[in-house]
Length: 186
Length: 186
Image 1 (cartoon, rainbow over the protein chains, first blue to last red):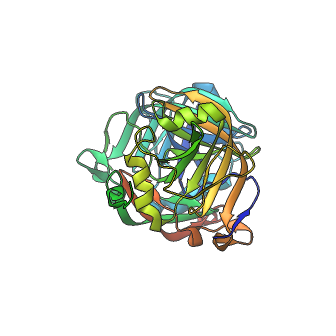
Image 2: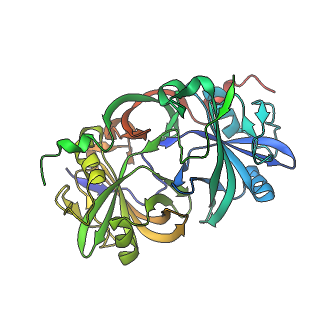
């Protein structure tokens, strides 16, 4: 296999599509993001990288709370809309019906099947972006999207993000902590 | 839609499946991980959360370098194997053919279509896990996986991770910064 170098760039194979919810000047705002993942198991934490000039970054700084809302594949238009326009110019508080949970200041998008409510743990200045790490205060979910009390990917039908496009989730190709038992070597 | 709370947990809808490469005591080691994403655009950075007790965490501390290697769907067995066994007990240096790039101490898995070579920028202690943020020093890729000089998801066929299972990538359902133009307005 011939390897080539393509230069340093902010690359990741696949990412989740999320809507970052934050109150800005007392009003709910939602921003599309994909640079998000889990940051810690105990206590449970997630993180999301946001350009420091963004309206949402100001809101997180203001309240020290935010949410990551998981849209379903059927919500790509609303989701992408929240990435096309800034809350500084356009009021996005009506794109979703907001509700509030334990933290009172992190708006949660009612139409999204899963809502991760976070208390800011740490902001890491990386350069153009700030990595916001949040402790998960609560997870809210549509009861119809749960199986045995946990969010179920088949019912949620989340959106994968990669190279400026949205994708569905494909077929299951193996179980973790299991598929590797077929490894022939030592 | 009836909302219920399911308690705080380390949840994310979909995540990338990666192999974290690090030299530990001078030998290449690869660990399966999914809690990874992009952390910054300029300079380009990625991050990965690793249990602080892991053998790989020690290696990153030792050299201040690591790699994130992107396996293809056909490499699920080798990939999961690297999550089943610890480098402390089993020598995983032969699972992939390692090569080294600019940083000399971050092993890159030759069989993986994309290799992200990183210089440690910051380690954030979150609790059970450390979030390692790395500046991307170089991206290496199989020439057969590029389109117009960039990694191409259709050629890479990466692995999505969610709820302890591996999935392929599904169909494209929209373009970012475009699909939202159909939003009917406030």
